[in-house]
Image 1 (tube, one colour):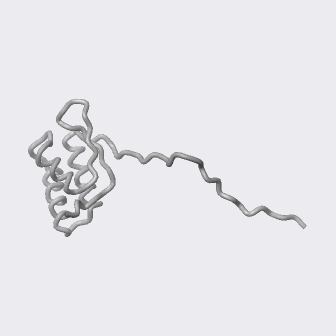
Image 2: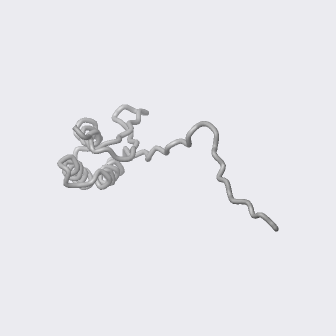
Length: 102
């Protein structure tokens, strides 16, 4: 089954000091159903609907992700979007054409 992947979102869990990185609509829906700090909310209802629509392929994963982030902000458990680290190893320098003088 396709989880409907999206860019990572980091949220706080119900366990103090523990964070979770959510990377798909399926994982976001599981999180909202099983480990959400509030039971009701306008943004939470919107996120549930958006995630279900995404899993049914009627909404893009990016749109479902935005709804999930808004619900997390409403619940007070949104942390951030983890940044990707630069690749390790040598950094390639761009080569510019050198001007040649006659």
